[in-house]
Image (cartoon, rainbow, N blue to C red; front, side, top):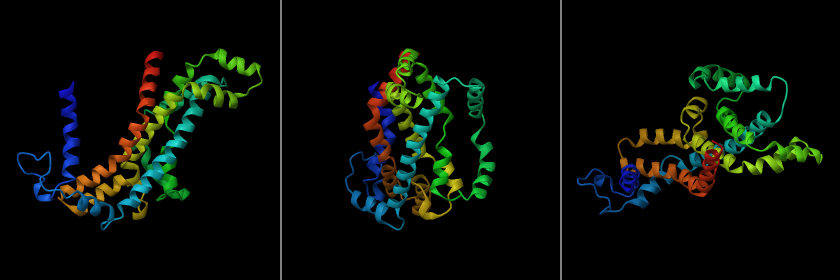
Length: 262
């Protein structure tokens, strides 16, 4: 297991070490896992304070990813609770209809989505980009399954005490599935941060670009200067590592809860 772990870590270690090197030392053989000449300050300074405002793209990605995660987790939790615990006419068929939309390829809806966004004035704006990812069929389905596991006796007792669905959701059901919501929120953040296709289609103005678009632009501009490209790549994945380190306990609890339910 240790050997397999090292195998998967090698590309990441090479990327990190390369970001510290002088360009002429990048492809020396054998590979210098500890650089003989360090150029880390220059490489990272060139990325963050060079010709292009990498810090601005970074802030754009943080803003879009955080807001999208908060809205998507809230919407998915509310929808999941509604489909799991509220009985209403045609609820089952409506849920099946929502699930059916998951089968439609993303590429098939992007053209009408693009036309609609142009018509509504949402094209080339962060608000439009956030709106695209704020509803998730997968998040709704995943959280619905966890809400289904909340015993109805808790809800019935709360109803007898005069609580409505709003209070039941907020004070009883949501705390019981908190690990699952946290797990989905972490996954949503990672998906949004790594999203390249939607920003590429729906953003045109340079100062609105995200890190993924900036990486593509940066790679084009710097050409084959791999030390700078690797410094930009390391900078781009730092928030993902930070989010995973902070949320790993919730992810493990969420997966364990799902395993117990299964």
